[in-house]
Length: 117
Image 1 (cartoon, one colour):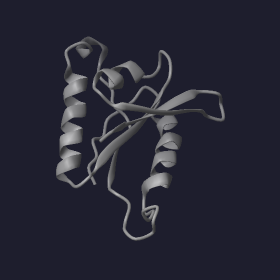
Image 2: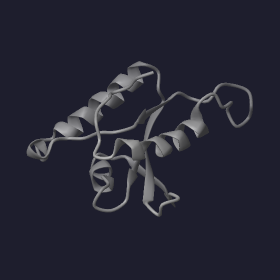
Image 3: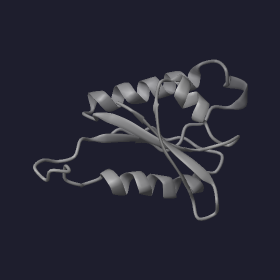
Image 4: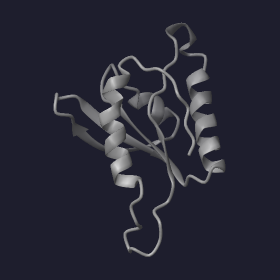
């Protein structure tokens, strides 16, 4: 398993998103029941200090994460980010991540999943 640990503006809010991704992925058999599901790396939090934004350091951190995950055997990477000013949907779309479904949390926040194959 590959992990990069960092801090986020509201890290406690990330936990439910991570649970949703990992409950779908961890230990589940393949849909046909014949083999294990592919390994999936999950970005839980990525934060860049305001003075470093625009320097491409965030893109480099994501690139390194994906590279490390591939070397560790992950077939793809996933993440969930809020939609709106607190999120990073545009950032991940500029990096070529595939947008996935939207959903709302119990407190009404809108989230979107992204995948990198």
